[in-house]
Image 1 (cartoon, one colour):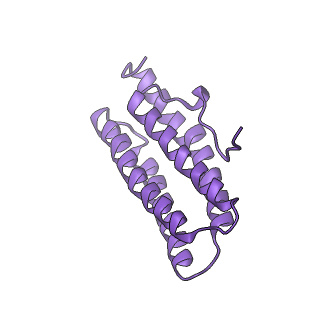
Image 2: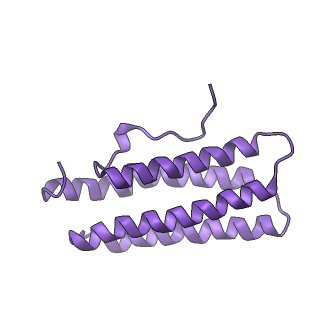
Length: 138
């Protein structure tokens, strides 16, 4: 069985299929990065490809969430959107350092795991509760 750094579970579901599927895909990319990091001869081109895909998917995912925030007038949107921007800024910093030849994989993976675990359990859970309370989801 392949070891995973981060795992999506129903406990972190926001009960919006599209968003849950995006979260699963993001976790898959993080686990793919973890696999590359633990392989012999870390291939920086593979990691850069994954990071680029992670940034692109994160942007698309954040656009999806933010669309729901606007549609359903989520009161915590501003702070949540700042969290999204913070992730992208940090990942791009890691990418720049990697491009400069620095080995940042372990730090990147630690950051991503911690950020996503807190983000889903706290930030996404908050909008889930708001959407549930206002009967936008069941």
